[in-house]
Amino acid sequence: MTESGVRESGGRRSGGGEPGNREPIGRGAGTRRSADHDPGAQPERTALSWQRTALASLILVTVVSRGNFERPILVALSALVCVGLSVVVFRGWLNAQRRTNNWRKAIDDGRAAPRPARDIFMVASLTIAVGIAALVSIAIKFASLV
Amino acid sequence: MRPDRLYETGEDPDPRFSLANERTFLAWLRTAMSFLAVGAAVAHLAGGEQALLVVGVSLALVLLGLLSALQAWRGWHRNERALRTDEPVRMGKMPFVILGVSVAVGVSAIVGLLL
Image (cartoon, rainbow over all chains, first blue to last red; front, side, top):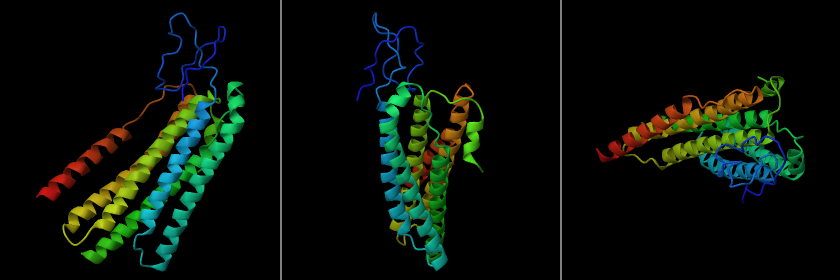
């Protein structure tokens, strides 16, 4: 997927692409490139990033839910946070995927602004919750071992 | 805690920068998930031998996972705020702490296994 398919646009400031863009913008031999036009790769890459995260969360949830939690309340709590994390991450993926279709034009026109703060907060805190569940299961396991 | 309060400051940045910041968050989150999954897996694999080493390594890995998840949120929040208020984006010290601790964990795991 190339991002260099940018069109010329007269006089507008090239805002510089995302950090790590492969080609320096506006330094082509005699061509003026602009980052203002983006033919849709950014939302799609973000959706793919959500996809990878959703798949990674499945691995995490599988491993953690195999832990030995012994007490029913701990089993229930860990199952809850595991299911919660998967649901939230997959919902994030779905949202990003929907956005991709709606936003290509909106981004080109400079109308769209992503505001994912709530999703991101939920995903991060549920990951932390799953991590605490992992911590609990490890503590239980080694308490019985020692 | 209302994450949406972030949007009360500054102006919406170029959407592409926001999206890039979102992907950075997701990358950190996957790092966190990998640390946590490996930590939990190490604990599963532990037999009777060297239980102390195994518990140490798995606890350290889970701790690294928690730190990475924290960094994912804090880094995203800080970057998004910087983008909204047109300030420079800074990385902070946490990535170096995570790097240092994971190297220390790896080295001590190898040393512990060899001894």
